[in-house]
Length: 286
Ligand SMILES: Cc1cc2nc3c(=O)[nH]c(=O)nc-3n(C[C@H](O)[C@H](O)[C@H](O)COP(=O)(O)OP(=O)(O)OC[C@H]3O[C@@H](n4cnc5c(N)ncnc54)[C@H](O)[C@@H]3O)c2cc1C
Image (spheres, rainbow, N blue to C red):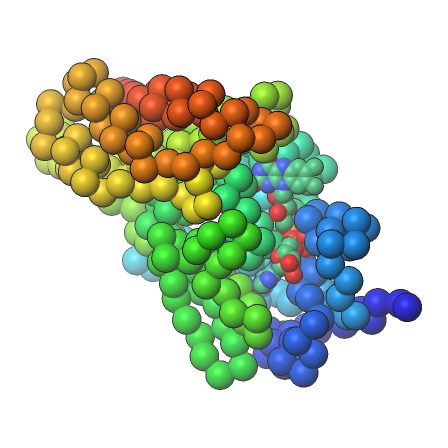
């Protein structure tokens, strides 16, 4: 049986088509969805292509300094964006290391975030950036904090009849920095583990805010605010950093899979956290 292809030109039309046929699926870059269809993991009767909806495209700086990223923005566009500076650079860093150029050219942030794979690169970066995910359904528009959006493996807050419209990065503080550190077996592979860090400095050049989110190390990105606070209360020296990294690592629940055993990842994660924080701090000190 063939698959019906819809090509709406507005968000309202796309949402209406979905509410009329709950089994239809949104098609963004197709990098994950088409592979899932090829292997018969999903067999949607209809696809709702999003590539004609101009309101889902592009990266826009808002007057207050927030960055609005349309769902259909490609990884390649994010990877080369000169709008993603200061703490927002953590998202650019994540986009840069997704897969390889062909996938970065077609894959979109909306598709990747909707898919909810905790091994993907955006989830941890968006949590560290305090991002908001804007979703729209037949009656409501909702903004969900990235930290609350990812619920479990391939499970997000996005409801069946909702479309992910945009990702919003709140204004970055003056003197804020962001870095994404990915460890993978080879370039282009999914992460064995990854760490996203954002931090900012106060007037006396002391770190007064830090976010550390670990990816590919559990069913959702892992963040431990108590460990971040202890780090802020410390001299942020090597011993304090090791302690914080161990505390965050203890909250992780890494898988045993082809990319590394759970035991290996437990050794890797604290080292990767220390490395990512050290790099971000050195950006701030430069
Ligand atoms: C070989 C390979 C290597 C990869 N390596 C990495 C990697 O290293 N790191 C990484 O992070 N990712 C990786 N990916 C995934 C890649 O980033 C995909 O681009 C991404 O997961 C899906 O984006 P897409 O735009 O292609 O979405 P699609 O494949 O079109 O859609 C994915 C899912 O999201 C739904 N969807 C799409 N857009 C929306 C929307 N706006 N609202 C609601 N639902 C929507 C679809 O219905 C579908 O269920 C890899 C993929 C491949 C094939």
